[in-house]
Image (cartoon, rainbow, N blue to C red; front, side, top):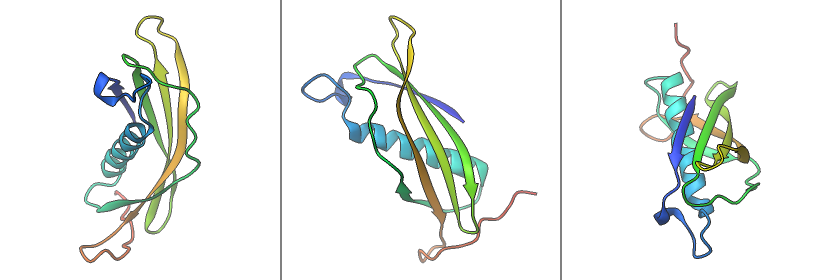
Amino acid sequence: MINHKLVLPEHLNHYGYLFGGYLLRWVDEYAYITANLDFPGHRFVTIGLDNVVFRKSIQQGSVLKFDINLTRRGKTSATYNVHVFSDSIETSKEELAFDTNISFVNIDEQGEKQPIRVKK
């Protein structure tokens, strides 16, 4: 699934670059949406991200592209690979800024793991 986000002044630190926490928030949010679209009717919570390494600084006005793909489905969990590309509006040059794997587990109302039901 592909999503986009415009980096605005309120997302920047005092040096003029994107706060990493905003990027992690968007990765979590967009991957969560993807998981719920892939497996409707489930109650997913984030259980982990692999290797949080910011590869490129991101400035105001950049358009971020989030490319999210399912890489593994277990009995109770699903893992997605997320690539985040930064695209300059002025130059249209797209560069990989961040990538990670994010995992979700399906839980019931009491917080206990539940099997992921496969769509028929």
